[in-house]
Every structure is written in C-alpha cells, then in structure tokens.
Length: 561
Image (cartoon, rainbow, N blue to C red; front, side, top):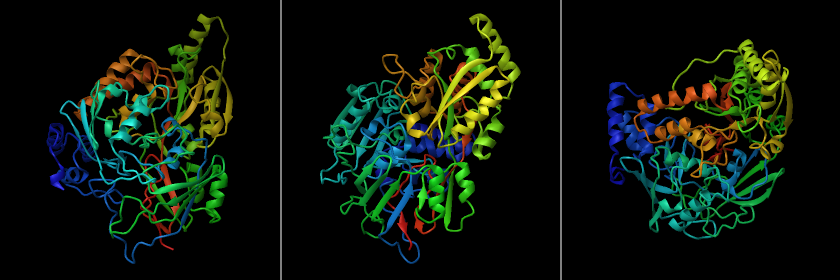
C-alpha cells in the first residue's frame, strides 16, 4: 500500500517522535496521522500496533470485506430494527441522527469514521493536507456509480458542497465547514480531484466530511430526497412513511465488492419500524425485530441478559445537553446561567436518568474521549451559591424568588428524567422550573427556538468539531444553524479558530483548557454526564459493530441463519 502514500505530513513525523517519547498516546497519534492523510495501515504500523477487532483493516472504508468466517458468509435475509422515523426532505438539513441512518443506506460519504474513531477514505481514494492545513486536496474514487447508473464525479461533489455552504439551505454543515469560507475557495481540478483552499486552517476536515447530513448528492438533486433517492449506497429505497416504516432493497449493481469477489451487500432487505423505546424493547424480547436504535440505559438493563442478543458497547461523547438562549431573559445574565449550573446534582441525575451508565461531565461540550480534552474537576452541587447569585439578580430586576422558568425537552433518551431531577434539585437554588416535555418530533420541530431546553447531541471524534457546529458564528457574524444558544463570544471564537489549526496535540489541549474555562465561567450549557452507548442486535447477525455515533453500517452485515 506504500505506493498510495504520496508523502507523510511533517506533523505526523513530529507526532511519531512524541509517541516514542511518551508525550502522546497511541490513540492521539493514530487520530492525527490519519486526519493528515496517512493511510490507516501506515498509521497503525508507525504506532507499532494492529487495528482493533471490528475496525476496518484496510486503508479505505471502501476496501473489500475481511475474509469469511468458518463455514462462509451467507447471502440473503432481512434485518428489522426499531427507530423513530420523521419527515425527511433535504438531507443536508437533517438535525436528528435517525434520519442519518435512513439516508446512509442509500447514499454515502466522502470519508468514514469507524468504530475505532479512525477516519478513512470512503468515496475518496485519499486526501492530502498542506503543512499549514489550509489546503486540502481530495482524490475521488473513479469506480463509484449512483443507483441510476451514473458515475460519481467531481461535479456531484462540487454540487454537494454548494448545498452545504448555501445559507438558504440551512445545513449544519455550514457550521462544521465554516473555515472553508465559501464556494469561491473550492476548486475542481479535474473530474476526480477537488482542492479546498481554506480561509482558516483546520485539522478536522476529514471527520467533518462524515457528519450524518453530509451524504454526497447527485448533481440533479432538486430538494426532496424521498421523492428522488439517488445515491451511491448499497441499498435502494423501496418505501418511506414517516412515523411508520422504511424499507430498503439491496442493489444488484453496487460498486463495492466482497473479499470473495462476490456482490455486496449480503442482506436482501432492511426495514425500520417506527416504535417508541418501550414498544421496541418488547418487540426485541418477543423476537419480532432484530435490533433497536440507540438503546437507553433502561433499555440496556432490560435486554442485557437475553441469551439471543449480542451487545456491542462503544466509547462515546454522546450527551444530553442542557442549553440556554443567551439572547433571551433571564439567560442573558451570566449569574442566572451560573446559578442553574450549580443546581445540578450530577451523580443523582446520572443515576436516575441513565442508571449510572456514563461519566460525570463538566459544563463544557468537550468530552474525556476527545484527544484535545483537558481534564478538570467535576463541579459540586451547590444550591446555596446558586441562590445567592439569583438573589443578587432578583434584587437588580425588582422581582421575587423563586425565579419561574420553563424547561422544554423530549422523552425518548432519558431527557424527561433529567428534567424532573433538575426541577427538584434546583428548587433549593431559587428556581421554580415548569416542564414542557413532548415526544421526539415535538421537540425537534422547535429545538433551536426554546429558551431553555435539553438537546441530545451525538458523538464527534474531535472536541473542536461540535464547538464549530454548535457554538460558532458564520462569516457575517451570525450564529450558524445549529447554534441553538445564540452564543456570541469573541474570546471563545478566537480560541476555537486557534485550536482548529493547531496540530501539536499538547498545544491544542492547552488551548482547549482555556475554552473549557470560558464555558465553565460564562458558557450557555450545562452537562451532567456523558452517555455509555450500545448496539444490541440478535446474535445471528454477523459483522455488526458498536459505533460511537450510533451509525447503522449495514453493507457488510450478514445473517447466519
């Protein structure tokens, strides 16, 4: 595979030296090396280790599958899973992961971040980064076809970038890729090569290209994906009814091949049925379905001892983020924000809402699993300090305590239990919290608009990625589409831009420590814990992985029955 490696980025050589000296660990080295264009095979070799079980072994996510197990891989069969299904129109506007699991069966991504959190080429053959990570060259595979027979070329990818970066589309990719600066900085070199000339350096580009709204669209896409489901993926869409079910059939002409030279995918049909968690658990136990999307800790507790099921855990940065609209009273006052943070009895919240299955968090949207995370002490529950802050605020405003606020959220991932526990613990701190709890659809329809809410955020491999998507500003100084808090903090933005372009892991962690301090002192979020996550699937299905972002990766799954 060495002939595919044009060059090794100088920062990778520096990191390899740091690895030998014990200044960085293997996970940190592997992440940096692969992001800067080193093949996964070469990166693992430089680190002196082999890929973990369940991770793609080759340089590309599009490489052939591993050798068949004893007895051979079987083709055919149906996989059925429970997952809430909502309205899908433009996939670049998706703001909920379930929709991402629908479109990824039909369409594909330029890159793929595997269960080992290493990002590999997918529809790309490879990429190269300049020394200052401001110029990225993307080389497309030349053997990829859409399900209508058209070859995928740079024109499709240029069209897709145009959709992501169009403010009128309203894609979260505008936040993830804000460092590009616009389509004027994207150059089509030839039919299979694209060059990005970034306004600001960024190390996260390859991982940003695997965000779930980032499927590559056909150049003819008109805006309604369900009506025109053209994609390069392993399955085609047979039926989609939001709130009911989705059915996919295997492509007969899928461009990717199995290790034995045969066709992929192995399964004939995928089906999602739209069920709430309790109904999904009952259906799994009854053998009516084979799996369920993103089981909660309560679901895991109900299913973990069932002999017919296999459980695949994943380390993750998934969280249920409490957030405040800082452009609205009373959350525009830092004392009120600080007071609510102090009202979290974090251990109690995690125990009651998530069966204790997680890690306690600070009030910054950066997790211990992120290589750039700077460890900090977990803040204590302190209602007396909270009440003192509120008394000062109330005296200035001429109002009486308790301060009446409304907390909005949904009820499918334990958010309602967090809300109820916070309501009880915050009373002693001077808050009277009314709860506005709906089903998932009722919250996702308004999640960026409520003044106080709890929003489920999925895993991202780098700490800077979620900060770009959820807390940054666009080129005009306006909050990006997923900046639900409307946070606008000049010092934070300066530090974030610096972190985006800092290759040295220790230096980036030092910058992240400053960012975490800003979040703690005046930020717009409160986070009690980071979630454990699991994939729970019937044992006859092989090739299943536990993915930290709860992605259903189905093109190499097969049924041994």
